[in-house]
Length: 342
Image (tube, rainbow, N blue to C red; front, side, top):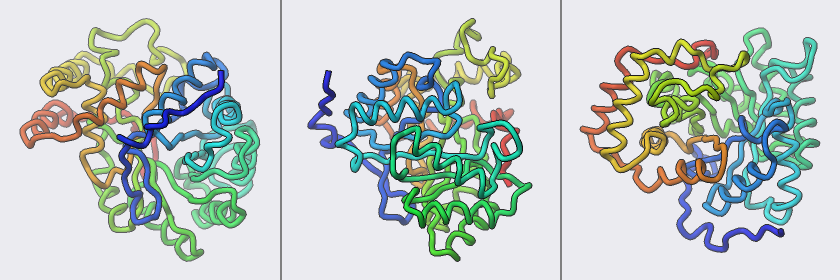
């Protein structure tokens, strides 16, 4: 059946300025890290992407190794673009990244010019695109000169393969240096993609201030703490949880009873606000105007709708914020200890 987008998709949609650029982004963007790969049901992902666009989501975020298997999320997204969005490309912001492992050998990960240029070229082929709107370096790689990594982003920008460039998971000093190198080449740093949630607040210690000073946007990934800030773990760890997978980036150590009790307390606060825990967590991440957009995932249309409904209540009283802090901060749960913040 031919997809006809909702004609009223922009009537209730809102957008936020990305730093001091000319680009605006929806307050919630859809990431294809999970649930859109070759191991997933294609039509479920397709329906979710259609629904997101119908509800005003114009930004879709990918990376070269999203799947599983690696590359399959971009392949599926490319098929969906061709089938449903070919005539709507100018209404979309599409981003991809490279930095983590993608293919075997020493040239299949990191921040080298060879890896980044090849990765972007392959991502464009998988998606059937001439360009992406944003191309990120996915993570800091201390074994590669920053000048080389940023030089690769400059090259992609000048070739027209990336309209804008970004970085992910860089700390304040690394962000400042990256922005300076790019600026010296006449290429602005558009956006930074850090992890951020009620349980993971590292960006509040200098990075948000740095981004504001530099005029760089912020897209917060994992505002739901990889599912911990949902109703999924309120009654313990379900048997089908991906935390049990051998290659999971989510440690079972975080799911101790003390942390789960914190999540249950936060869930009670969400109920008082008339929200699900996931909705409150997304709204909380967006409470700071320096956060341009929250990047979410979705297993299906119902889960997407639940997350997007967070936009119905984005305001917090001082008392609510204090209550959230009392349950979320004390004791500290850092879900991304292994991510470099240099």
